Image 1: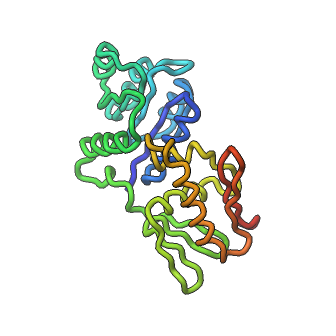
Image 2: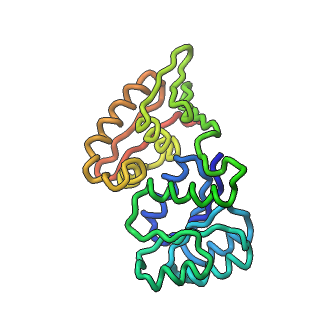
Length: 235
């Protein structure tokens, strides 16, 4: 199963992208935008790992790391920061960081590092695996099983490609609200997102065909902004 992650990142777009990507991978993610709210979350709940930006409002990441280690000495911490100097890395590791990832980074690399850290802290569990829990969404009278990538309508079953399933899960997460185009691109295609914009449009077209038989369901193209999955109001 996926672990429970505390993500503290003040860049709204980056934080949202990271949170959605990690949720796609099966993790529970609590996103906070500054040091004080991040500290409060750690005081109220238990997390398996903390992803921590260094340059934060209210309280910087290094200061916050000291407090987090006092509250939860065994809490793994991965710093995510643009501060890539050796002095900064040395300070991060001195404070007890388990890893230090310099921005910009590839989302898949972040995922691999999270898995490695969780595996060290939980060697006898499956916390570093993130795709075991079933994730089923209701789309009108259709069921979408993200784990198996299957759409089920009455007696008919269709299998989606990996990217189709990832994109549909994001749309379901944002159901009846705007899924920003940039968030979808960076979450699913990562660093190559700039060159994959047309490819995403192709996948949206494919998903529309899969969902066209479901009454009251459609995917709207919000010009210049993104997409919106419209579900029946009773959903």
